[in-house]
Image (tube, rainbow, N blue to C red; front, side):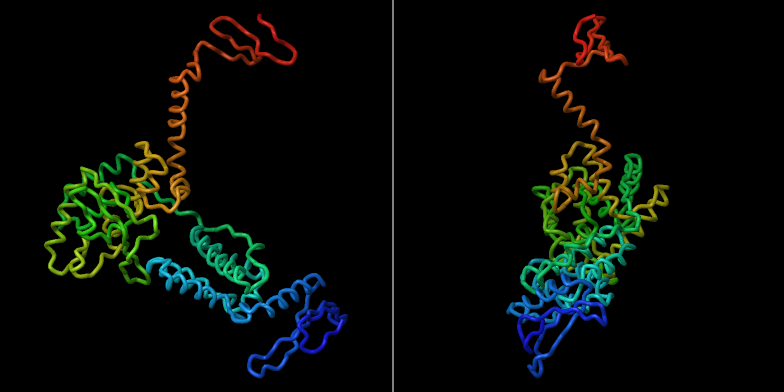
Length: 417
């Protein structure tokens, strides 16, 4: 079926020489404004028809016309810039997104126009990231979903290709963050408590992480104005982050939920006062940071980890990073009976599911203890009789009850013996 030159409807026909179905339409050259014939071949007429419908929709959509030709890379950059301009994300979050996009932009797929990218192409591209960790893979796919949802909602594309894409499984073994045992924590705390700040400059950082659960970046971003000694609280609202070897101060924590007030434990109070006094004694510390190295503006997290490694080696404790101190705090909190919702607030998690998923093994360990509390509650409220250890269920289904036997009712029998 033929169409007039420049027709807005387009046409579909079968080309025997190539054994293909051809979708044909006319577009306009952006320079000369002359009509230009364009064709695309398909294996089936259905595919050709769907493609032509998409093209016709786009040609009539003024929003698409305005954005015609936008590449996936440009779209991702546009979305990020829009969030920055509208103050939807912090500088730290922006840097994290840029780090994710840096890996994505290494591929050629991002240079294609969004309307030309197929689900199969996206799937093959995402599969190349299977060597990344599960968390990194999730963030990468999140960028793709965000971009194509954005394009679909605004009419840049007629169908969202991400609907047919599955998330590849990471081949990288999950890194297990180990918590200290009670014996290890006792040994570690006794060691650093007996050290001066000169002997162990990071000792109070370790104690704050261990007994308040701060992220290392949150801890290193604290200044004297964040400490409310009268009400014994710490205000967490910033973080130090490291990107490309450069340490930067962010004006917000890792997540919105990371902004929180935390009570100072009584046992930690003297160490925080000690650190504040040391901070006030430093001549070159305009920001009044609690933890500022003598020769640099900010403390490098890597140096904090190196010192921790040396201490643990000396104490013959298995190696762990500073994040394990935060993990240890959460573990002790669960052992003490803190509920997931309360722990979520203390840890600064965005959602309680993050808390539950992160500490699944710890919660499972105490699941039986918690269930026993429920059973005891039933007994206390006379909702369930306390079991008699003399009662025994025999293999043949007979319940022996304090020397008197009764056959459990079945379809065939219902009598006492």
